Length: 235
Image 1 (tube, rainbow, N blue to C red):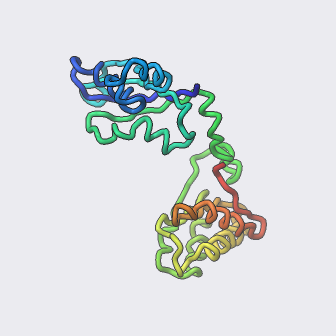
Image 2: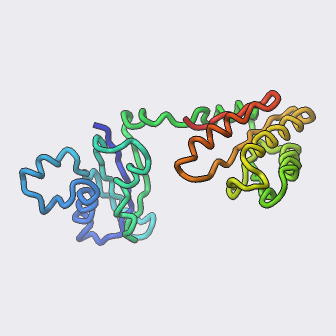
Image 3: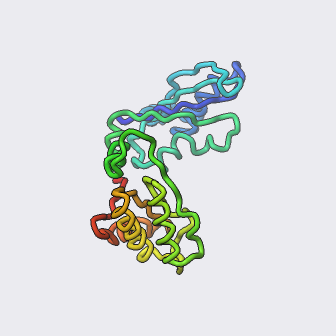
């Protein structure tokens, strides 16, 4: 069974820390454990959180690192359900901080992760021996698509490796997605003829939640432009 070990920092007195840790483990899984008949406890045992360790530490004040192991056979393998299981109701408690999540290998295998990773991004921008420079097209709010083109050129000529849409560039009349992506890629192609460099363009596809996947596909479909094409950085 896949496991997640969650590490918490708990501000609690020494007299009650073990009781607190046990309530955290059961409260997030097979609650209310203490009130269950023994027969029901046995049925729920495989799905109950288990306290692995309690270590006193003053990193965040006076408190303890508490590590709890959660079985995830009953979980949908996605981050919202994982965070709900490991932190959901605890997020309301001011004396509990979620510090780390450690996944078992069988759970990690369910998350393919990024298509490229750090080295893949460096390969795309052909930069190996220095930090990457990233900028945001901040001057694009309320301005025309021609203005957006000029700003993209300025970023390219300025030596930027990754250019990101402003996070507020939703589906506005002045720079709609179907115009913004080709114009952004055209600016990159134009600048590349002089600089020999091809920055990445990170497109903002923010919109209604149920439309995000289709908007991402639309953005990808709007490339290629000249010798450039849109790529998805995440599986």
